[in-house]
Amino acid sequence: MLFNIPKEQRRIMIEEIQQFFLNERDEEISSFAAEKVLNFFQSSLAPHFYNNAVNDAIKVLEQQYSSIEEEVRTLERPTIKS
Image (cartoon, rainbow, N blue to C red; front, side, top):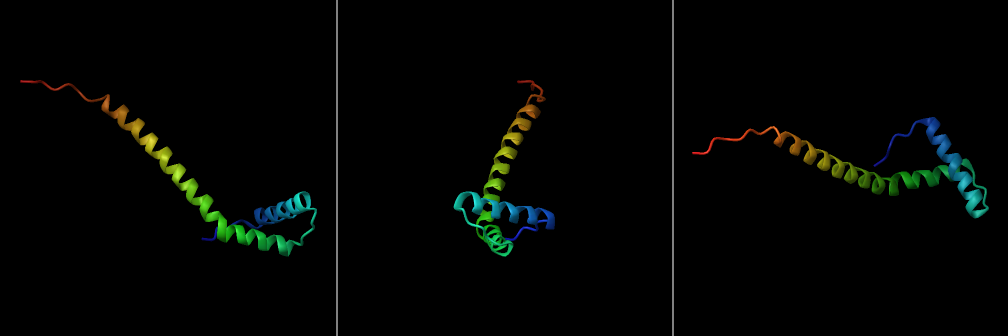
């Protein structure tokens, strides 16, 4: 699953990858190498994060639905018992 990343955001991400390598590994990498790293994360790892986000959203929706259901149930009227 590939995500469309706007050109400017992609450029910033590549710069951040280069900065990471410089700070953490004391290694300068080219824009091309940083883009390869970004492509790897985008194609191999991003779907895992995306799926976790989807599952988190589902949990929030379930909680919201439960809350709404409780609110609607408070509108029920008593019925006459024979």
